[in-house]
Length: 142
Image 1 (cartoon, rainbow, N blue to C red):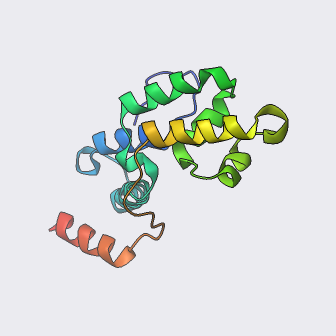
Image 2 (spheres, rainbow, N blue to C red; image 1 turned 180 degrees about the vertical axis):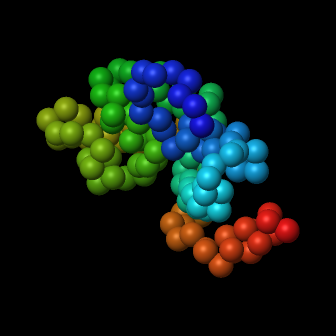
Image 3 (spheres, one colour; image 1 turned 90 degrees about the vertical axis):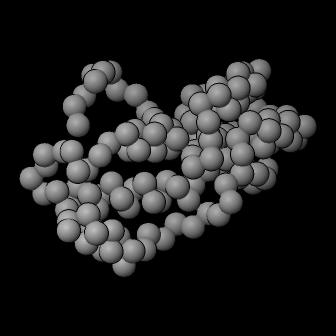
């Protein structure tokens, strides 16, 4: 991989998944191809179990626009995109000083906005099945 833009920027899980879906381990010339392939496979498999797997660029853009009135930081919005909070407790873990900055009505409105613009993933599993990956590696090396 080469650095396209040297400016540092934080990516959402959705953007990382998009990038990894564009990268092909077969076409790369890494010294340790199996390790690289394993890293790509495990990362993509994990991200496919997260909210990023069902998000769209349009939904994220609409979410960001809808959240502007709440004066959230870029880091807080990024975490909302990645974590897709569904309760006040989850929201309070993302937004600093929630009680001082937001009313309970605003919290509910934010949760409604998140639910409206970011679809809910079907399954949230976090374990990567290494046996399945070994089969994947065996099939690609033959």
